[in-house]
Length: 220
Image 1 (cartoon, helix red, strand yellow):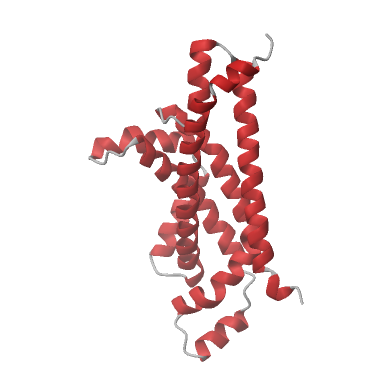
Image 2 (cartoon, one colour; image 1 turned 90 degrees about the vertical axis):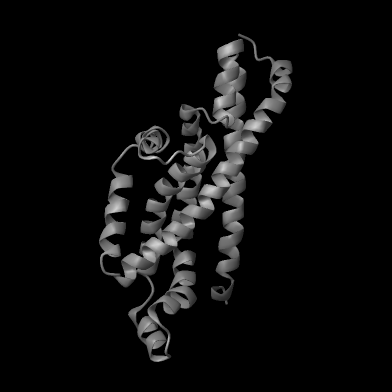
């Protein structure tokens, strides 16, 4: 089968619509997963009673069950208890919960590098534990954990392709839909591989610029 560039160009608008949906669901999920990571890491590090155990159990559950099973549970299982989400928000919830568990551990590792002396000094200056976390520990932890957080964000972006399993018309869904009608597998899979690679490179570039800015005070 020859590579048909004209066919690929004709499918460009459909692929761009799928790309836009992939970008939307991924960006929202990345932001929410980082927030989950910050809150969860704070609970673990500050050893908040009861919540510490809940967060630990959540992390273990997410890390030890398949993401596809989690997605099916959210989309097909939750309506059974009266909680029905749209395709889009089912995808966002699944990706957020999945990546959030890993971000908790990424940030907890970063927080482990914050010296005990900093905490004691902060408390001596009258900071509460939560203000110490917000003003002192979190900025330092993010700088250290940023490479691991980027890896999780990249995995989230690639795992957004799983959402085609519930019918969300993201990039992979569009490609498979066109293949089922036109049988042009070479063009479609080549296109989405290039697009996903471009998305990951852009995300990596943005993260490298953020890391450069965060490390600015430590370069002199």
